[in-house]
Image (cartoon, rainbow, N blue to C red; front, side, top):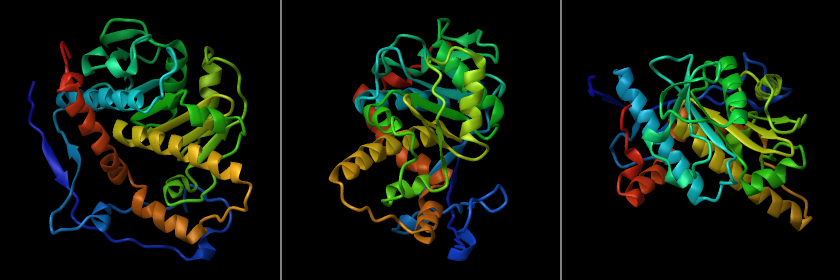
Length: 304
């Protein structure tokens, strides 16, 4: 197979901010805020910052995705998001988009490499990669999301401490900081906890609660789930949401009146910081650290 790839660089951007009056009421699909390709807006020095690479060879792209998927698991392990056999990340296969890759059941996040990932079809049958069992609940949730949302190429779910704690309130995060502006009009809450997700219907209900546009959802009494156009985007959103839950709990414990970010300011920040290219880039320091820390081990791709 060819290993040729090209990298697309951000070339600059413009940004249009609507008036505050245009933000009143719940947005629909027509008037949701649109991103600009704007990472150059927060980088400087005269050089364009490399964004998401454009890889034309789909088999090379598959390998690249699995390497970043392994990196995401290593980051989750370092940040303490493991809980027994719970937690999963999935990535849509670029060669056969009706299938996806997921982590093997019962292997620690911190030990995973690209060659450990399991390729499964829409029925949950292993069709390639590492020939081993996968988490049944993970399959139910991720299969429903990938089927309902063609724009979602990756999804992350783990039983992280702050996410579990905040989920017990059944509330979305408040927009109280620059970081939480990333979740402005971009988060859902699934309030119907139905136990361990072993039924197809429960996975579909979670997908329905996520909606047609949101990238993050709080699963009441369960934890967090984030999605993205790349695994880097989904993983960064998860780490950001987990930390935001931790901060929100700290704020709530102070019992002092909170000052929320205004809608106009939140929309502006969301448009600057919330596009897929920027979120991908935000994850690269953590990803590159894990490659360095593992001596490149996480990139192992035997038989892919």
